[in-house]
Length: 340
Image (tube, helix red, strand yellow):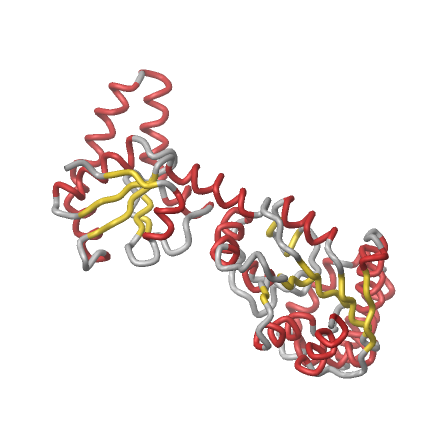
């Protein structure tokens, strides 16, 4: 019995209980993969390059023979890895287009006694499917506020209160500013960010509102896809007006524990935008452990930048709420009362 092909939706539904094997090269996998998939590459990065070059220069037959020479000694290892991750002897397999690589590996796994399902159209069809998800309309409310307003914590509180929330910064491993990488893991590629976000997106109830934080198109090095970014830019904004002195204290609490070297490097990165004199004053204050002054100087730039972005929105969609508290639960309640 030959391995069967599944469409994307069925494949992803099966992946909730069955392990997924991505047989593409490590470089392809690193660029982006189905969340939770395990990479058992048919070819290493260098081997894939060798076979691909032969295919272009000498044709399919010579490339196929070279590929068999490479793969032959590794076949038993592939089977051992597959059996180790599939205790129920069932496995999902895919490559880039659902062609020779996944077909070969699927055949091998079936010969070894595993029940195999393959992804029709491969990873390419998966990418097309998830990008289409962001085209589907859902009511979004954007939580806005100047730097230090505690938007991420308020979002978390809204989620705990039963609201539908996705934390884009958590998925991007970055808080969005020049200082946003501090305390975060390595950022995913933009492609992987979309893949990870799709897992959350597929859980949404599209009859309910989705809360997102106001973000730039770039979250650190991650670029948001156009449909999602356009939705954020054209959705209603609940803008929290939090006094500067309260926001300064929050920034001190969040960043003062980090190595001065990291804070110094991040400050130098925005020198042109902040201004040489402001950078000098901020770094002098940092040396004295005067974090409140550092935060106050940095907010000169960040407040101006945020308000500039807000000014480009349809102002009839911007709803302002003033709060004098740095209390995520209280501010989340305030937001919900305002909406009602």
